[in-house]
Length: 364
Image (cartoon, rainbow, N blue to C red; front, top):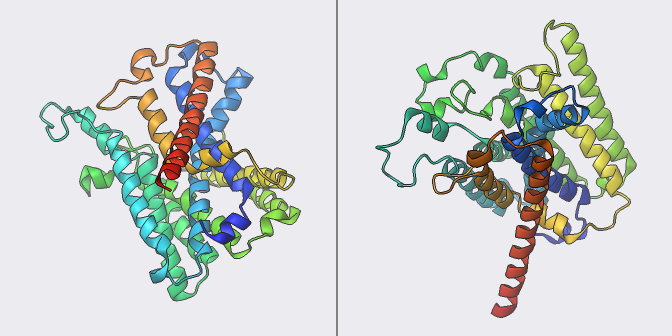
């Protein structure tokens, strides 16, 4: 971490990162276990949960792009000399590797003789880790283009983000398996089981980079009410724009959050993320520091993500809670299990941090 980062730590980013990953932990837990009879939008609590469930991935992706670009642009070096480039490439390979490892179809490592087509389809499906990995890669490409063509990060990142958002509704109707092999085709659409294809999901990561670059160029702007108000205003404007768009697209609704390819949904989600970010940044202005555990949770999002998925959904090497109790648990027990999962992930991060400190003390 640089001296600038230590001196001007942006508290609201720590809060957003921790919120995003813990929201994902409870969201996966409840979605995997809750019995169908409780999944009714007539229940206000479930309706709110369902709405926030649809916002979790955009928040997680947008925040990932913000943090990566913020740290990348804090280094005032040309692209080719920026140490964050090497770190970013390593991160890209790690995320993609872990994304496929979590869906690996057999415990035999290299023997696929007993693997079914359904298992292979699951293995090749693109999930959030592969998506974020490629999102960070495209952010670095955008940063390179921005520097060499002197276009500025805001314009370059927005154009790159739109390259993934605009074609999404059209790409969703193309059978990419007729054009590319399955491992490549799955990055273009969800037709073969991908949860987060590049179109439009990479757009959330890359647009998050716009905010990260702005924060790096304006180190103390996050301490002003004007900054928070600007985020909220832009967010409200985007949501209003999505509503206006719906007026000219009969039958399209922002309430249909499962339809991730429509422009109104993408615009609405980005607007919501900006409003939430603005509110959190405003609240954080009155906070000089946050509990250490919040920062540690934000720094260990990848660890938390991988471990909680292995516990809930299992892997080729272990059964998960879904295998045992999938969609069969009453609401109160589900809530207890979700809270327990959050506490377990928090304790895991706390324990690992203690071990790291002790190890450093032994070395020194």
